[in-house]
Image (tube, rainbow, N blue to C red; front, top):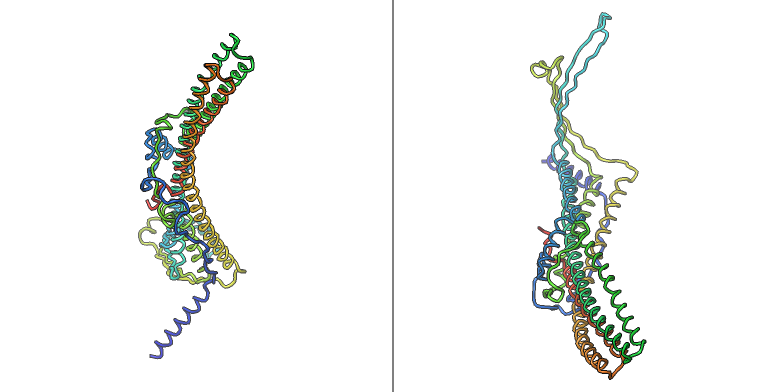
Length: 464
C-alpha cells in the first residue's frame, strides 16, 4: 500500500516537473473588433435576391458569362493559387509522417585484409544486413499540433484561392461593363459626329448665301473637329480595355465578343443581410481566420519544445561472409532501445522560437481584425455607391431629356433665322454632355453592383 502510494506521488511529481518545462507564452491579445449591428446604408438596394456563386449570370449577358468562365479556367494568378494547394497538401503529409513509425533497411558489404595470428595476411569478406525501426511518442501533443497547423495552413490557402477567384470574376465583370459603356459612348460620338457634319454643311450654305458670318462657320467647324477627336480617343480606350480583359482571361490581346447592349443590362437586386453574415461569406476573412488558427497551433508546438521527447528504436539484422549465408544461416543481430531527450541548456533558443511564434500569432490576430474592418468598409461603400449612383443616373436622364428639347428648339430657331448659331452650338454641347454623362453613370452604376458583390464575398463557399 505504501509502495503504491509512493509510486503515485512520484508519478505526480514527475508530471508536475514536466509540466513546468513547458514554455510560458502570453495569451492572445484582447480583440478590439466590434461588429456593427446594421449597415448605415439601407439594407434593401433592390429586390430580395440571395448572393450566389455565379452572381455575374444575373446580368443576363451570355458573352459576359463566357468571358468570366474563361477567366476562371485560364487566369494565371488563379492557376498559381490553385497549384499552391498541392504544396500545402504535401506539407500535411510531411507533418503527419513525423507521427508515424520510421522504417529503413541497409546492406553493407565489406572486403578487408588484416594480419593473422601467425603474421600472415588474411583476407575476409563480410556482408551485414540491417532493418531499423524508430517511433517517437507524442504524449504532449507537439507533433499533433504541428500537423494541425499544417491543416489550417491548407485551409487558409484554399480560402486564398477562392479570394483570387472572386477577384478575377469581379475584375472581369467590371472590365466588361466598362467596355460596353465605352462602346455606347463610341456609338453616341459617331452619331453626334454625323449630326455635327450636317450642322457644318448648313452653316456653310448659309455663309455662302450671306445669311451668316464667317464666325459662325468657324464655330461649326471647330465643334465638328472637337467631336471628331473624341472618336479615336474612345477607340483607343476600347482597345486597351479589350486587351486587359484578354489578359485576365488568359488569352492573347485581341477583340472581345460582345453580348447585350449597355442599356439592356439589368443589375440584380441585392439584399446584403446583417454585418455578422459577412464573417462567414468573404473568403479573405476565412483565410485570415484560418491563419490565426494555424498560428495558434504552431505556437502550441513551439511551446512544447522544452518538454522531453520519447523515442523507441529497434533493429534486426544478420552477419555472414557471403550473400547466401546472409539470407540463410547468417548470424542474427538485434537491438532494442529507447531514449529520452530533454533540453537542458540552449542559450534561450527554444524560448526565443516560442516568442517568435507568439508574435506571429498576435500579428495574425491583428491582421484578421483589419481584414474584417476593411470588409465592413467595402460593403458600406458598395451599398452607398449603388444607391447614390442610381440617384445620379435618374437626374442625368432627366437632364438628357431637357437638353434634347433645348437642342430641338434651338435648331429650329437657327434654321428659321430667329437666333444665331451660337445658341444652337451651346445646346449641342449640353446635349452631347448630358448623353455622355448618362452612359458613364449607367456603366458606373452597373460596376458598383459588381463592387458590392465583391464586398459581400460573391457567394463563394470556401468550405467547398
